[in-house]
Length: 253
Ligand code: PGA
Image (cartoon, rainbow, N blue to C red; front, side):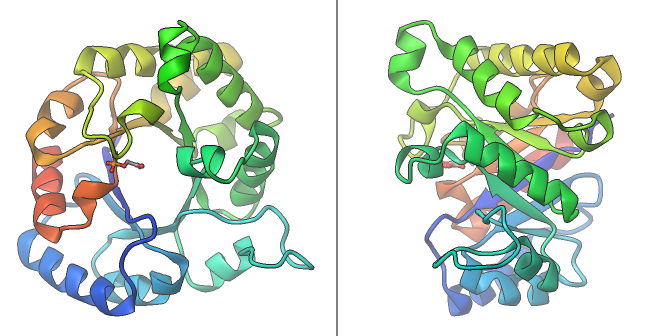
């Protein structure tokens, strides 16, 4: 059985003070959530506060990005060593905003996945097609390219540790959610590709979560889909109340 991974991606929201307010409220609302993985990725500067507040609460804390080198002349970048020093658990890589606003390539993301695994940071690898790619019936081609590049040279044991987030670009921050059928088909395709790249054991164990306008109102229908192992939540994770609702739904599916 794959454990559900319910994660909030705060993007460029919430400094240290708001991080503290959020977790104080969240821990009033959730309890006994051991059956699922609850996770938050705050901005870099709020990571120490988030780690501190979650130390005894078993909420996983992650970064939203990192560089693939450990140190050097890379102005503005963050090393995996700095994340380890903060006791960060996971790192989101290849988010569509990184791919499309900051022009991150499949090649760069592939290097970051290797570095994260080397440093025992769980990569949350985002893949997903744009609206144009979907309309041109290129969804599977794009997903295949993104996955084949990210998993290039990754051993089966390491591959199992990766969490894949299927995030159709047209559904992110737009209020348009993929229907459970559309998301389910994409997840099925992704798992099938993992089986082709590795074997059925890796394909059965790897977690594939859905992201794109997940909210309390649609979470159950999405989480009920067989191949959907959790959610990566942007907007609805900014409020402790709505994030807690999704966690509670996750505990019941
Ligand atoms: P959204 O963001 O839930 O606001 O659509 C999801 C994401 O970007 O991970």
